[in-house]
Length: 141
Image (tube, rainbow, N blue to C red; front, side, top):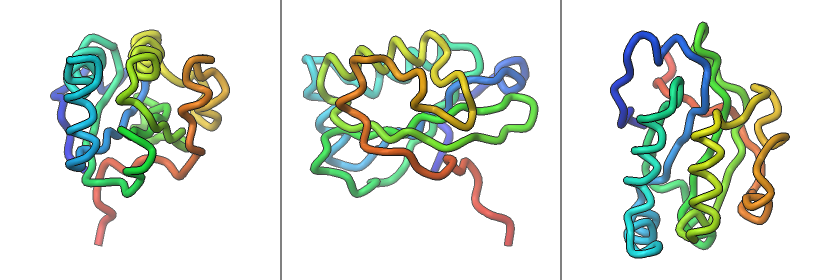
């Protein structure tokens, strides 16, 4: 994964959502087609304006049949640790994308160990499941 946002020290110390966005060919194409706008660019802008939010992009996550995919987790600013992630699909659909953008702008998941507890109702049908914490660094060897 690679970071797509440079953060200030204040942003790094702030807790907030960590979003892993699939940057595979299909997801990128779906984001460009969504609502005549680039959904990935809208997400980047929302994260850049949200204190403590971080965006990482990944290679294809292999869930192409589910539309554009992302995972969202809560990140603790003081330790950098993240809790489990909630996986979302269909983010190429304007309603789902708008709901995700609103959720991230309002701070994203509140509880680090239960990221789906406060998910907006408009995203219920987009939930693919929960998974392990998002790793932002390669493991030490």
